[in-house]
Image (cartoon, rainbow, N blue to C red; front, side):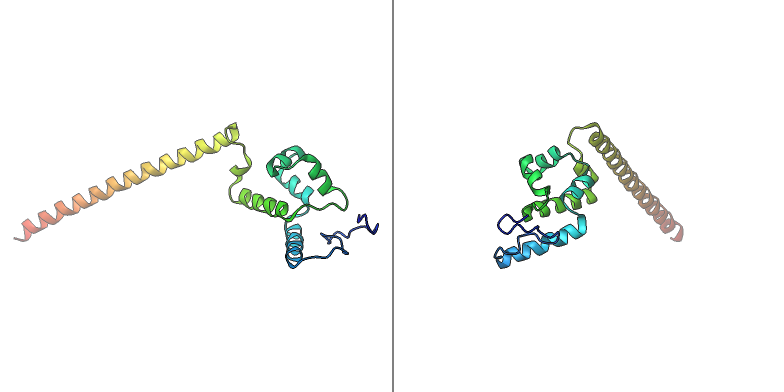
Length: 151
C-alpha cells in the first residue's frame, strides 16, 4: 500500500508508481520482475530452500523484521536480496551440498562418498600406469626377440 496516495501496489510493481525512478532503479525493477518470474516471490524461494524465516534471515544477514516487512502486502525487498537468493538457488542446483551445514552427518556422508570415489580413481590410475608399463615391457622384449630371430 502506498501511504501517500492510499493506493495498493500492483503485484508487478516494485516501486510505487508516483515515485520518480532513476534509470538504474528502472533496471533493478526489471531485473526483480525477471527473477520473480523465474523463481517466484520471497516466500516461494524460502519454501524451495526449505528454510524457516529465521534461517533465511540468518543466511541473508538481515533482521527478521525486515523479512516480515518485505513479505507483507505492498512490501518490497531490495534488489540485491533477490539477486543473492537467485545465486543461492543456482549454487544449490549445481551442488546440493551447499545447503548442508559443514560438519553435519549428511555433509559427512557426501564427503566420505567423494573421498571413496577419489581413492578409487587414484587406484585405477595407478593400475592403468602399471598395465601400460607391462605392455611396454612386453613390447620391448618381443621386439628384442624378433630382432634376434631376424638376424
